Length: 181
Image 1 (tube, rainbow, N blue to C red):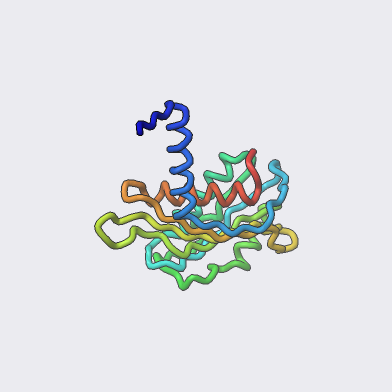
Image 2 (cartoon, rainbow, N blue to C red):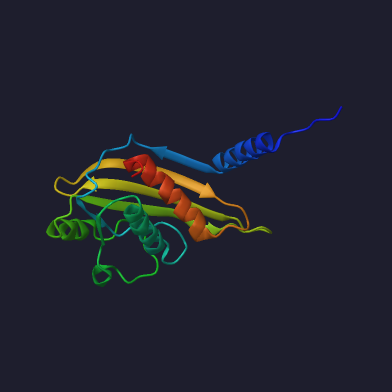
């Protein structure tokens, strides 16, 4: 018996397989999305690093900042480097959250993005797949109330970069929280 597939059916089948493969190696648990004022001022607070990877939190912060801007947030500032702890590693606890929230209030920000990095590495083995785990929270600066939160993890294929996997994961998380522009 001979089976023939049209190019359209073959493309659809491959797209479905790719989507299933990606879904199988990523998890995302998110609160319901919020409808933030995209014209309001935002700040990215220092993320905590609960990994063994130096500077993982700063890498995730940088990606999150760029993604917020790419998703239509008009005004985003990052917590000043001069006010951050210089250590390569931290205990996984938020670094000076009270000080950071004070800075956010003095910056007249309406929303703050905070986060934590739980995994940021290449898995040990022949293929060395990238693996990322992140949690994010959107905080209303004036009240300190957490408006939205999510946790997610993703591992990639051996030819993917760690930054690429992290960018895709954080982008998916932010889309779940604030929607697409």
